[in-house]
Image 1 (cartoon, rainbow, N blue to C red):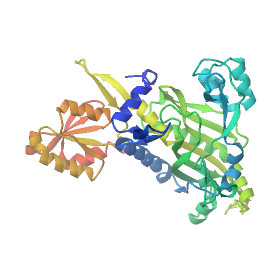
Image 2: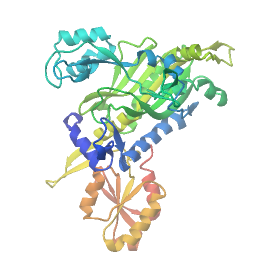
Image 3: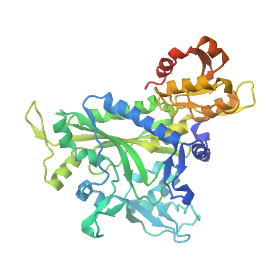
Length: 459
């Protein structure tokens, strides 16, 4: 089995493009840098991951509620959150080749243990200077001073483009949960601790995105905010760190490819912060962040909106502004991590053949099964079986080429079960079910087929 560090990112990108997972955005027009469109299999994989998150974080958790807040919000929201004043990238230009770079990326690429995310602008510039970090494009060391570049996309509401009509595309989902704290608490009669979750798009005008879908200007987040009383926050923070790690391993990610990264330097509002990182072919990268945000966010929204954000404890009649434990999951990064972890090239025993296979968890695989008639003469009955299975789960149908080639095509897109309808099926009412990972085959009666497969794709 290939180790993640042995996998080539270009190979992953090519697989995604040629097998219908992810396409370059606006490709027929030459594309738009770092935008990507999810194809038929990628969209299905992405939605399957969303379904597992909703099941784990909303359906199975008591006092957890989902919202779907608008992307466009009152601009005062972003003043309260601090994004208008301080949400920016530290940028510097190479004076030789004129390429623009993020200072923290230059440092992290030079030394991943330097933790540039905890440095000030001045500390980053001194580090780059002291270590003579070269420009990745031309190799020279001749940079401008670091400047701050605001990451929010802005647009205008109405027909006049002036400062009074500026609104922003949200750079994160979390504020939609915070401004609805009172609404959810009141309508759901929720008692602390309770949680608000949301899946949605966010936008960041990053100057140096890259590494396929790892860092893009448009992305999707699965956010989960737990509101609690001060004193309960530390235990909940530790709990959600472990809860997030278990979610990823339950999705099928190898635990040795996951690690915690505790933040040493914290944002001014944070009491604790930790990332879950995944070992991509290009190195370790964040796919989750869990943060103890204290009562900073609700306090700021109370200050800027003039609306009390207090919770009345029904047991003590005490009023207070709750603390928030945030656990946020990058959906696009999670999907990329799952594809990278699942990709393998296997030598087939007693053969010189190598098969490409995606060992995706059956719960998230785009197709749960594929119906393969052994002969075109069997197509009529095989099509009926496909139609029957499609009422229960996503099922592919493939009648082109040899049965071996059809197996390989399904292996490459991660289909966990191939169902061969053969001439014996006409007599005994059974089909041959082949397991993607073991390549073992089993005869199963078609009357039990749906139950058989559903028992194996549960999450």
